[in-house]
Image (cartoon, rainbow, N blue to C red; front, side, top):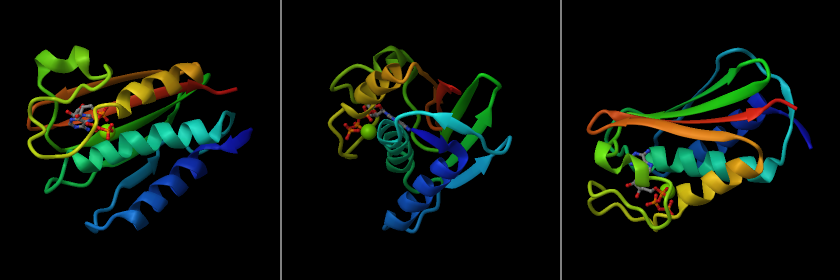
Length: 148
Ligand code: ATP
Ligand code: MG
């Protein structure tokens, strides 16, 4: 299906903001304007929702998360940035594994499957996913997909 990717991410962020009981607001920025792409919207929704809900869940009490869309010619990139817990460096390799939960999650609930599924769905759409994260500072998850 052909969709306007910026509008699509904006609507998804709006929906999540309306669902948020903690009155937190995820900020969305279309850094280079919008474009149309051929994709599977339901897979994209699943991917972005998971990343944004993680950003909210692991950053309670911190600044609100931010989402960016960048157009990079033959691909587009979505960044989900939070100012939360971060992930310990020595555990970075395990983040996309199944049932992985970092040792610093405390009593925040989760199954440890979200990112494992996100990685599979990203592959399915010929995309890539990676992240940077610093303990006590926050995390940035990046996903990029070809503009078809
Ligand atoms: P669920 O299956 O419900 O999503 P989960 O959130 O624990 O459970 P994942 O989304 O796969 O599972 O994330 C795996 C682990 O990676 C988390 O338990 C957490 O330790 C860490 N993690 C993921 N995203 C973040 C983030 N934005 N900030 C800090 N830690 C994170
Ligand atoms: Mg999760």
